[in-house]
Image (cartoon, rainbow, N blue to C red; front, side):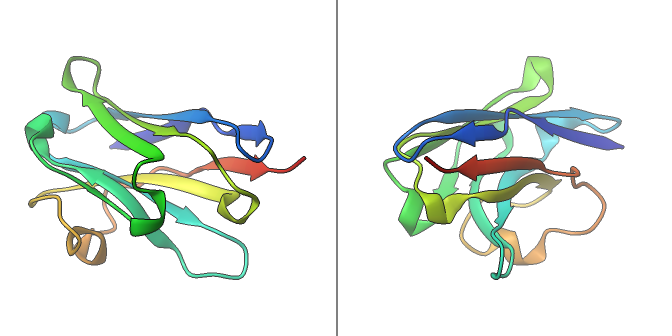
Amino acid sequence: LHLVESGGGLVQPGGSLRLSCVASGFTFENYAVGWFRQVPGKEREGVSCIGSGGLSTNYLDSVKDRFTISRDDAKNTAYLQMNNLNAAEGGVYYCAADVGPCDSAWYSYVGDDYWGKGTQVTVSS
């Protein structure tokens, strides 16, 4: 059972990155998928999720209108397009999968079974 993130890196403030999360070992299309981030000095927080079939999405208020989550079930892959990044958003970004509808409560009950190891995002000039 694997989730593997990629796409992190160094970007200047105001720049963009596209993260990818490739899943294997489970029926990806049946699961909601979400992105979390761990910023230094802060607790891990849920950033965005997308429901099974892509019928629902949810975003942290601070990233609305800048981040876009999507999924391609044929490729067992979820994406997070991040635009206009700021320095406070640098950290490790993780993807996770769990059943249930994607809404603001989903982040709090995601289990330990399906998590990636994270990809580092650094926002700096």
